[in-house]
Length: 481
Image (cartoon, rainbow, N blue to C red; front, side, top):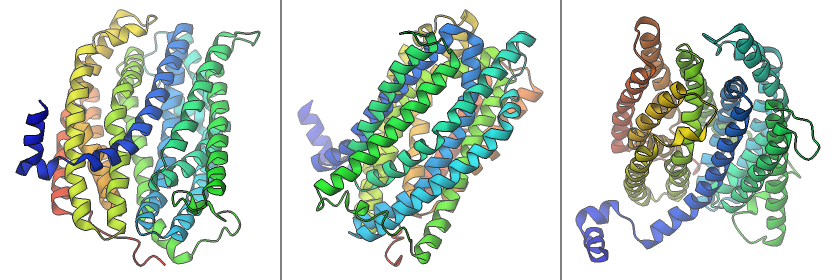
């Protein structure tokens, strides 16, 4: 087996698509901490849903709907810090620590602005937003309970929006500089705190009142403050302890003079605003798809919650490769090493496909067993969830290719193209398709779900064409000063 691998690696195909030891060590050095972080986070999310589901299905549905809306905010933060992240990766590759520092300052500002806007929206519109997901409830009482649970959950979660945004601003720049361990450690501690507090506050253990779904929200807010404090304190402590380490140089004097060169502000805004709009539009698109599926009944809401929660445990592998693509492509672009960037793209995409086919096969075979984790769900819900999990497993290579394509296009500053590739596609293809199937046909939810995933083949074709054309090969920081 070892000799066969060496022969493959030394062949023409292997030299083009299979990296050497140094390449995989670099990729895994980025991917493994992110996989660990996201795996623990998703596992705790699974336990959260199991705890809330143990209270009642209505409680689980209410929390699920609320999390769909909070998810839009989360993606807006990711989009907001993505623009500065692109610049910081290329600045770091060029050895420009001042440029990384200014990118970090911009990231903090945009995180604060997005948080403020989200708080205003949730303060005034949370109840109408939650009620739009409640279709065909089993009873008026169930609808009333889901509305109250979802609205109260969002109200509490508002207190955790800003610390989450600050954490992501720090984590984005640190990862762009190759530092993934601090964000991983902060996230791991945070989710463990969340897990313990969930058990205590949801069920009223250790003398605390039984808060049910509200307890889950309180636990999440506390854990977000814990994550923010850890990542901020550790990052600044490392900067003082290791002043020569380039990964932390951007923090030196970062808050003493918070001015950002106007020319760089304009450049990051021009490149970053489409990313913020993209993440907002894409996350709203995902929320819209969930809302369309919810029209088929509250059983579908529960099944979709189960599916997304369980699928995230497997998706962490291909999602983490997006972070690796950003760094492994962005840094050589900043050094004008375009051949190295192209070589990394071929090898990353090949590695991504190997991961997706392997993990997707494992997920497919265990899918019939996974929904039984939710013992409170009835047989109809588990049957729908099983089918949706099998479809998601089969679609993993498609999703993985599209995901990596997005991050590679983004690393070269092609943010308008990424907007069209990601969110414009979502609103123009799967959403109208699902709307038409839900509104004008009597097809079962699983058939609709399959059709939506088949449509993603269009996105894969677009991604392959754009990568082949090399539209992403650009150094966007060479003249930023």
